[in-house]
Image 1: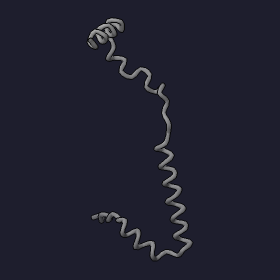
Image 2: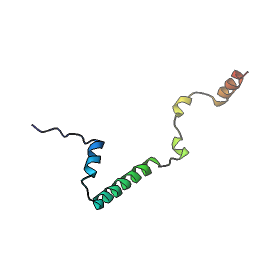
Image 3: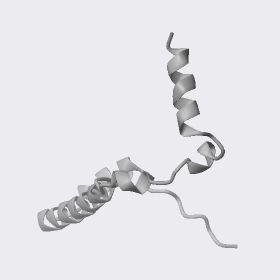
Image 4: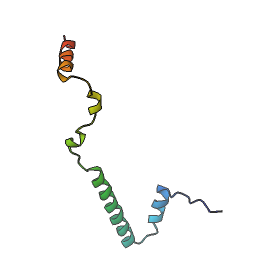
Length: 77
């Protein structure tokens, strides 16, 4: 029967750092930094307002734009 892998906790990582040589610690910092930068770049991807074009078009099927505007303006009074 296969053994279930135990998840490594934050505390496990911290304890493991103590056993690393300074060069290994620096290497680990570089690795973590590179991955963090990559993840942040993915989050920062910009979108164009044009991507929204056509969304919700089905909602307006069969509705006359001028009638809609007239009814909206009448509701303001």
